[in-house]
Amino acid sequence: MAGATTLKLRRLWLQVHKWIGLLLAVLIIPISVTGSALVWNEGLDLLLNSERNVAGAPALAPSAYADAARAAIAPNERIASIRMPEGEGAVLVSAARPLAEGERRPVRTNVWLHPQTAAVLDTAGSNDGAVRVLHNLHGSLMVPGAGRQIVGWVGLFMLISCLTGIWLWWPVTGSVRRGFRWKRQPSFNANLHHQMGFWVLIPLAMLSFTGVWISFPQTFGRFEPSPAKAPSGPPRPAQPLAETWLTPDQALAAASRAGGGRLMTVTWPTERSADWSIGFARDGVPAEVKVADGTGQATRQRPAAPETTARTMRRWHDGTGMGFVWQLIIFLGGMIPAALSVTGILMWWRSRQWRRRAARRPVPATAAAE
Image 1 (cartoon, rainbow, N blue to C red):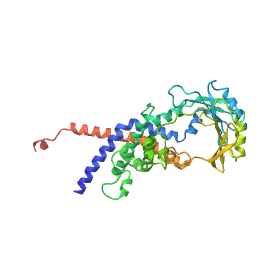
Image 2 (image 1 turned 180 degrees about the vertical axis):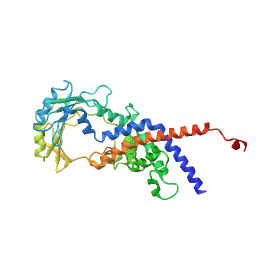
Image 3 (image 1 turned 60 degrees about the horizontal axis):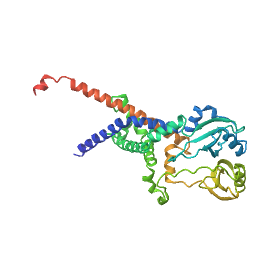
Image 4 (image 1 turned 30 degrees about the vertical axis):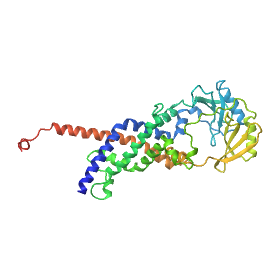
């Protein structure tokens, strides 16, 4: 009786696993492949935009980079921030334009400058370029509005597929070692599906779960230590000030007196906060100094924002700061599901063809007489 129940459950999970793969393959494949590519997004961006790939460490004051960027942006755009490279590379200046009516997320203009001459290397909108397309495809399938939620539901079904997949991989008879045998099935695609599916199970389940968490921030925000402080929706971005009392060099000098380090970022005062934000790398730890634009006084110094559950989920999902081994696991965890979708479709098609041939096969006369 127990054996019959197990077989019924196995058939049920097989149907669930099969139809998740078949119906969602057209969504799973682009989400998985783009996720793998975005693990190396900075290197990919430099590969696709080789003009931004330069040698040399920053050698000029922040005002020199700001002045060079102003010559490359529109008159109504305002410098928002300067980001220095880690070691050598281009200096990135971001500029914001005034928000249009009803607009919540304006497009910024990014200007890449040579670190030693401030010559303009490239200019592009924050939504331009192949890497941004990959981000939009991975995060929302390029569907306005509900795209992020669609990706979240796909992640949930992928998590269910992982759980049903391990049930189907587990040998019905014999020891667990039997599950690692290559020739469990007569088909190459089936054997490949079984083996790849087992080894990618844990990374794929982690990527699916963290993807669901990222896609539904309001649902999972209640698990943060202070859910009451979580915003009910994305805040309206504050615009950088058109005119400031201090120059970026003066703000940097004031911040350095309060305790400096390797300069990472210079962020302009905004209509919401009249403070400069100067980011340093101090003993390998990011730190930020606030400088009042009106007085030049460094009023507050704090380390980087504390780790939150949402930030941890995102780092696990995209591999930011997690090291090469973790990033490689994430890369394979994205590529292998695409291959599993293909092999799963081939397995389904082959079984469908086999059933068609069996249905057309003539019934022996003796069997018909019985």
